[in-house]
Image 1 (spheres, rainbow, N blue to C red):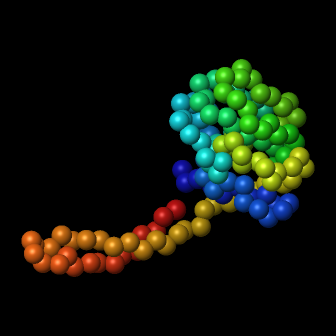
Image 2: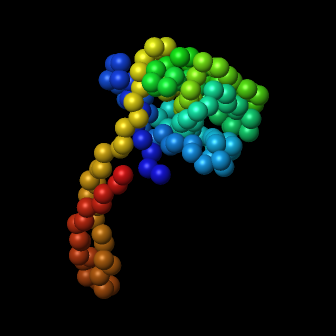
Image 3: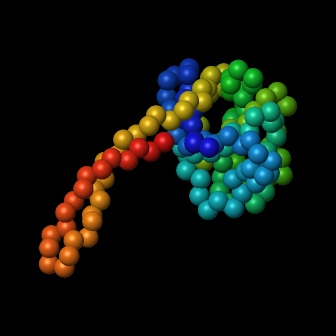
Length: 145
């Protein structure tokens, strides 16, 4: 699945650009466990979830609880690894992000999950000419999602 962009619809600011939907049972169980790093602009979204843990998670996380309308109902900032349960019974879903992601987020803000725009990135392909010859360059464009 392609990561989505999370935007604070209340302010228009981008919260994160690399959030994946934790749909499958294995993804929901493992979450961000074992990752050596989680950037503030990446994370996981757990739909129909109101409790998470940070067991076996190696880095601090910012945790955002959302209601059914994707409105922030509670925030936990810089949650350290090895916490048994971090809960919010009022929540409908949970967004786990790298620590520092929620600095511009407030309770009551409404979020949106948006597909990433296609990005056109030019690059040069070197074809490896014969010895002594200059390499011809072929300019191509690559589309990244």
